[in-house]
Picture (cartoon, rainbow, N blue to C red):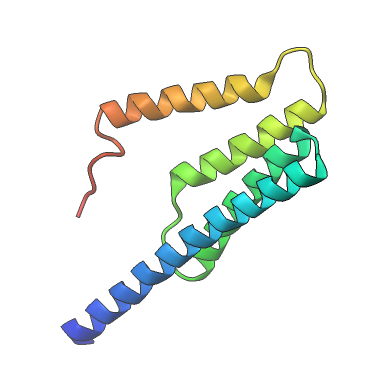
Length: 119
């Protein structure tokens, strides 16, 4: 394989990754808009977003792209948070999990874990 072929494959994968990201955001916005229009309960909206996030990661994996671990965790958090809301527990676990995930992300980012890319 020539250097030009490698660059072409890299560009194609980058384009696919960008398209999948845009599709994921588009699906999320359509889902939220429909849910608001139809007045769907948040205990269904939140896991729906998690399913979209995890589905995009599955498509990435299927197409030979690297899974984005951060988004896999966020998708799982959304599903867990929504299911917790559906159970109508006294403790609002969804917001607590989201706040915890945000704090962990801030800590990792401040230590450079997400800010630097290894080559």
